Amino acid sequence: MNVKKSILHVPLYPFLIALAPVISLYLLNTLELNAFDLIRPVFASLVIALAAVSFSRLVSKSSHAAAILGSILIVSALTYEFAFRSVHMQFEPESLDRFFMPLWLAITGVTYFILARSLERIKNSLNLVTLVLNSFGIALIVLPLLPAMFDKFASHPVTGGLGDNGAGESFLNNEWKPVHDNQRESNKYPDVYYIVLDGYARGDVLQSRFSFDNSDFTDWLKMKGFFVGDLSHSNYPWTHLSLSATLNGEYLQTLLPTEELESHAPAEKRKRTQFFVSALGQNFVRNSRVRNFFSAAGFRIVTNNSGYAVTRKWSSSPSEALLGEINEFEQALIGSTIFKPLISKSLDEKPYWLNQFDRVVHDLEQFGSSVDQAGSKFVFYHVLSPHPPYCFNEDGSMNRSHPVYETSDWVEDKVVLPSYRDFVMDNYPDNVAGLNLYLKKAISDILDGSDGNAVMIVQSDHGSGLGLYPHSVINTDIMERFGILNAIFIPDGFPKNGLEDTISAVNTFRAVLTNVFDLDLPPLENRAFYSSGDLDFEEVTHRLQDSPPPVHSPDPP
Image (cartoon, rainbow, N blue to C red; front, side):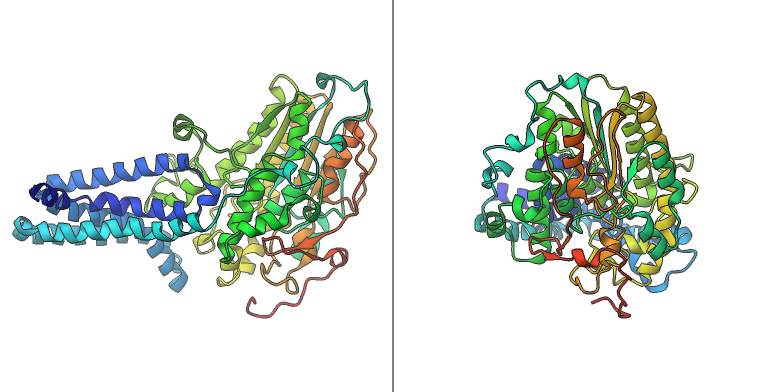
């Protein structure tokens, strides 16, 4: 009994409080994460809690009092960004960025000092307080686990991949093999560079919706020898749907085992969307026909770690998880704490490496330098720009996004925020212009480094989202959401059949593999289908061309 009592009264709750946000966010996103993603956040949370308690132990000379005081520091760190955003949304004072951090630290310091003085008088009678707070800490961890455990037992993971849906015995069915017996060796084929720019609208949409002339960039591409689809469009409005179709050269209605996927999908809307993002990302993007074709042809696959679930690199070992780049999960955790503003800059006032600006610039530099890697290769980079946050100014310098519009990754949350569409109108065009400067450098590096003997595809997955209403196809500006940048470079000496202004993304690799790699993949009809993120599709092809934006009601539906 005494042993049990001593264990129950050990002040563990500071560590449980520090771990609670990590566990909760992980459980909300289990479909897009794996267990290795917990290693660094759990370790960092425990170290921070230990530091807060150890410091407080020096102040209070009592382990029980130190746990209470350390918890004050931990809670202050965890709730800072929530408080900052709440005040910002209510008052939006111009000087908030300057005074809020000192004010918050001052409030925390005063509270800490007063509580430390008070605990000195009662530090010998804190056993009951510790027991209660330990119970509270355990509840913070256990309560989020209950619905996750229920979901785990109520459903089963989707098994199998593209080859199991009746479309053929494997990804590389006869349709996706070269048609000539005397096919060239893989080292005689040109390398292929495919970069997906998330949310990059095509030229006429930028002009009509944003009054932004992007012809400087598109004319530069044409001068370099690119075909640019001036009326090109995506086939679906979301990344996971669009890339699944593009990288498999097939419409999803034909490609997907729809009944199997839907039978395992959760009913709740956001969990349902996350489920499809995960299922399509793992089965139809990461293991796509295109990727498997190039692997079978002897090409090395080179990718970036986008941080987005569909195209991110998954850690497969503890060492890889510890040494890998920061991922979207870790960014979300940091972004909800006091450490976001503290580490957003280095000492010389340059943006810290986890910032979106640095991620995009780094990815583009790496994409351009991949030309120097030896051997035949298929390079696939998914760059999260000009997708929000809008991290570029017109001159290519870093733009710090307004914190009000970083409150959620869900579009339906953003569109109801004050003046959100004005924010997009003001920042998106400059972001495109700044991004173009880095794109030109990366593209030039590849063309120069390969002496023009490379295939390059510079393409978007969907438009900007200015006129997107996620659950209303009637109110959504279809042309704006589906009209995409689509530029294709095929070296001299190869045919360029199928490269027409209206080419849609699903036909991109059908054209490239037919013209350059001896496949026979006739183009599909260019069509577009709307979906709110799941597998219910409504055809909107008739709304694509010369379509004026809908007249929106003052409040989004």
